[in-house]
Amino acid sequence: MSKAITFSEYGAPEVLRLSEVTTPEPGPGQVRIRVRAASVNPLDIKIRSGLMAKAAPARFPVVPGLDAAGVVDAVGEGADAAVGDEVLGAAVGGSYGEYALLDRPVAKPRALPWEVAASLVTVGRTAFRVLWQLEVRAGQTLLVHGAGGSVGTVAVQLAAARGLDVVGTVGEHDIERVTALGATAVRYGDGWVERVRAAAPQGVDAVLDASGAGVLADSVALTGDSDRVITIADMSAAQHGVRFSAGSADPADDSLPQLVRLAAAGELALPVWRAYPLDEAATAHGDLEARRNRGKVVLLP
Image (cartoon, rainbow, N blue to C red; front, side, top):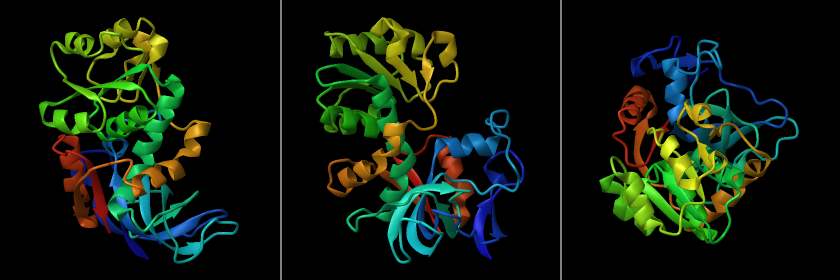
């Protein structure tokens, strides 16, 4: 037996409880890690609150969490790692616990802090996937809504490194930071369309909406083509003819090792706002849900 955070009903952060659970055993191709850090993602909140209940009903009790980094302590047949290896990856069956299973572990460089390693998985792969889906190329202009958030932060850096002109809508507190990442940062809110047009007089070729702030109609008008707009956060996408990007795409499946190398080399920054003990998962969810954070939120079992 081991300890993990579980919930047995949908609801507010308080449904999260520290529980005794059966320690998971790795199947073929899997590894079990002793978790050193687990990332808290917005999707965790949607699942816990019941917003995803129709699309993916929970089988209670649920151990939440999508991403983890830790030390391999057991391997399944054919697993591509050995006991004692430091790895990160997408968790199978939850990551908010002392132990977690990973399907396709990626080696963690020693230069990469545990908190960043766990944080990079979902947000990094999401940013990589959406840029691939938008088929953006050097010389084009990309608008990123929510450029100060974790997915936006990664997308800005990846796009700038590929030679794109990047404009990012952000809160006042993130203007300086996002500018330093290689984007022209403009304040979101009323008048954002005019500010973007002033920042990109050459026009906008593609839009990534990571904010879910009701910007899709104006984004389509800016590009002149709904196919050039993708959202990861606005469930009204279909009403605007816009793609909602979720899940994986083949190129993104191979992106995590690239992202890890960039982060370890200091070429990709992903700020971690706060790390919480495992038994403070409810507080972590509450802070993320209230958008108090200015970077990734992680749990340290």
